[in-house]
Image 1: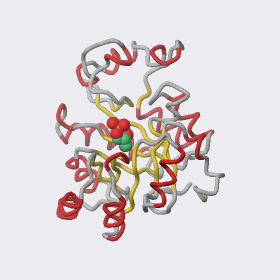
Image 2: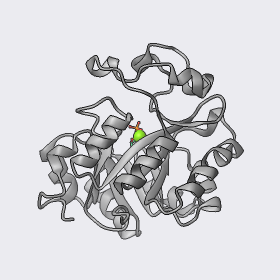
Image 3: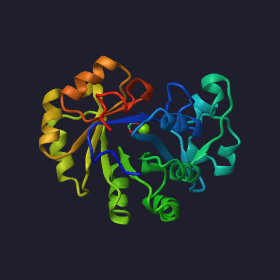
Image 4: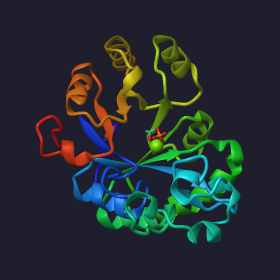
Length: 251
Ligand code: G3P
Ligand code: MG
């Protein structure tokens, strides 16, 4: 299977899986996004206290598991005991580990965007130890790494340079483009918040050679405007709205 984004335009990226329909960042959510035809499925990766990479977005487990601590404060075994689905629709779901996700992606021939969440709780060596065996085992999976913490992307470039990297930045202004260009890491793409993006900055981003994706847009008219402004890929909670069979997302 080919990595569609960021090599080709235009792409639809499932934000935390099909998170409009299934509890975010669970295996069910990823499976439903794949079935709905997403080009790429984005998930958030964090490390447990004992260094196991798991799929979870928030800084604390309050919203999903009704616990005020963060993922990094629990061991993997402790995290596995919690329920990740009931908050959403009353149906229990298990924690998704990165290992389980990669095994599924291999079997389903699914391309993934792994968003690595803040390195602040774990030093880079911990990330290296956590990711290296899995990337070795699943060596030929189509992956793109992204992070708001660009130091983690530097690590990815140093250790696994063949995977493309995307710089995440919330507020993309023209000044930020200089900062991204000067950063000592090569980014194939920039992923940014669609609400803050102007057509001028979108144009400049493309002119400087980066692919451009925006998160997280669930409005069909807004997505049309983004594509007209030069955005090539859109993260959405509901890829069913923009399946790859529709002309705006040529396969
Ligand atoms: O990776 C794109 C998007 O997921 C970034 O924001 O907070 O939803 O992880 P967030
Ligand atoms: Mg994310």
